[in-house]
Amino acid sequence: MRLGKTIRVLGVDDAPFVHQRGERANFSAILCAGTRFEGMLWGDIEVDGADATDVLCEVIRGSKFYEQFHVFIMDGLAMGGFNLVDLPRLHQELARPCVAVMRKLPDIARIEAALHNFEDVERRLALIQAAGEVYEFDEFVFQCQGEEPEVVARALKLLTREGYVPEALRMAHFIGAAVKMGESSSRA
Image 1 (spheres, rainbow, N blue to C red):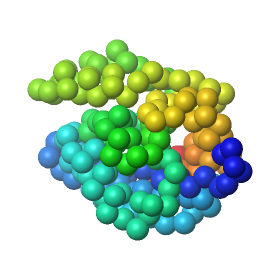
Image 2 (cartoon, helix red, strand yellow):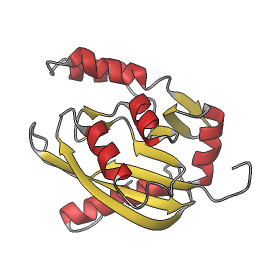
Image 3 (cartoon, helix red, strand yellow):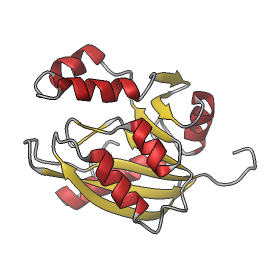
Image 4 (cartoon, one colour):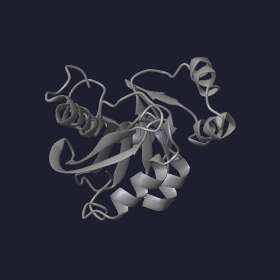
């Protein structure tokens, strides 16, 4: 940003899935230069599983886009139900700032109550804590690893065409829904 270059972002969101443990949930990863679409990845993880971080690292690092993007963003910390991403590890393995963007402040009490349905509740709670503080800057709510929150907020603003969702996440959401349901949803 300091050099005035276009930020290339990889935005990830899960597609609609069957809410049953052990099933697979797809995700789309959209590469954008600023808000302009440049490419896409597709993968899958276990619903309510523990493989999201490993799969994201494998799919992204194995892609032609790995050397091209500057920042990774995802829709919240969870994919495919409660398959939580280890944000610090993702940052370390991708060697890029990693950001979990949320539409509103998370209801931690409700999340903790839901996580008590899992045998590995302590591991999952630890992943949420390890992701760091939840920041609110302007209209953005996020957790981040690998960059200062003020810088992340400025980048999110540049990566958002309108509203409060960066364009790469909007596209990931719409494309995932269209592939799985035959048409995109009305809200990203």
